[in-house]
Length: 132
Image (cartoon, rainbow, N blue to C red):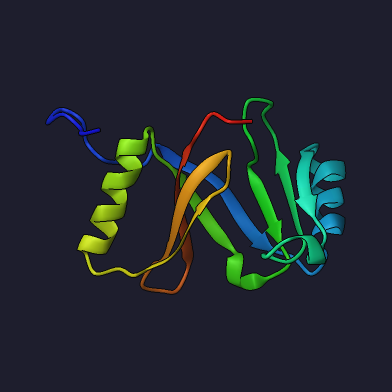
């Protein structure tokens, strides 16, 4: 799949933020009770390679707006792209600028890769697969 000259590779916008939390479930309860966010998933520390997690959303059409992770190494900001071709092009753009990719995952609901900005903030660029 190739992009036409009219198509540009860009992110659609910030999709979700991943914050570190000592207790993701307790913090998820706070965001639910105070801001009305809906808890849509999560795991215990022993059920995930990322440690304990919780995922929340504010809009029914979104998978999640906020990811809470016990392991601070996975704190991140996620940017969405509009197609698999854009994801591939963005990957090439990142490595073409000499930025090392730390990891890539097929999350089922999305395909993503991760890298750090010059200040060490973890960035995720992903494309939603459309799979529930």
